[in-house]
Length: 137
Image (cartoon, rainbow, N blue to C red; front, side):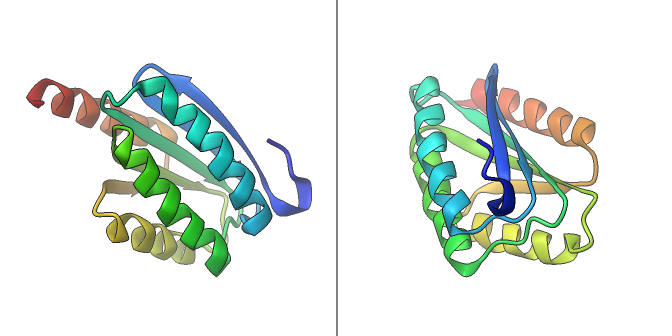
């Protein structure tokens, strides 16, 4: 979804990984639309284990309202089978703040997560983790 000044994102299913590309700021307007789209996307997995790969392009700092919405949608995703998150921060002047916010979100939900500097490493870790956990279940 393209919300221009409010940031934009794209959600796509790739097997047992849900891939999100997010650009720019992530305020309550974007967060609301994202939550709705994410809820629809989660239903594709029907409770089977899956992982979330999110790439943040630019300075994607969350407002307090957006951060709370991400906690809520993360809990929703976990109820629908999400078992891990890999986040990638690209071309950001505020990567340390973004990483701190992501850590707060995922630790609040007790979700396995890692933050990466490149998409290939993030995807490799996530695919391997989800496959290992799926076989263990």
